[in-house]
Amino acid sequence: MPQVIDAGVANHSVSATFMKLVNVHHEMDLADFEEIVKFLKENIDGVIHDVHKMDKLILDDGETMLNCPPAPEAKDSHGNELIRTLSEKQTSLGIAVKREVKVHVLGPDPDDATKTRIEIREDMVKGGEDGKPVFTEHRETISIARNA
Figure 1 (cartoon, rainbow, N blue to C red):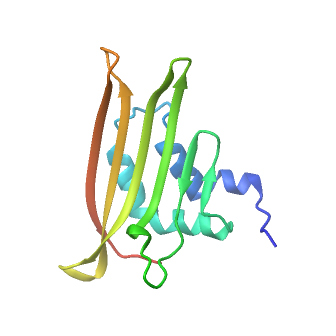
Figure 2: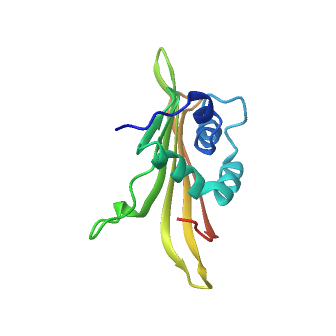
């Protein structure tokens, strides 16, 4: 039986906060990759747990899609992907901004066996001044203790 989730609780959850942070429609500067990294350092397992406790793999609020694949199974690592988001801003001419955030496990930290190395990557495509798309990418590797 599907789990019933209170909309007020869901809107104030750690996953909803993350979805707002990566949303291309928010009023903050889109150059906030460091804020995304900081948030995930503290909340990565909370975001994943939030999505999975709703018996979901994907949440979509109409502006941001958040995907948290299931835990790896025998012979299937799901590409070590933990989180993937997609947010787009459209105009009458098509997609004006597309932002995707991907979070992958790289493996154990060789310097600290209690931590896991994780790559956080942001890909963004925006329309340039000359009408051609401009692609930007940010990457950062973090090492954190996982609660998963």
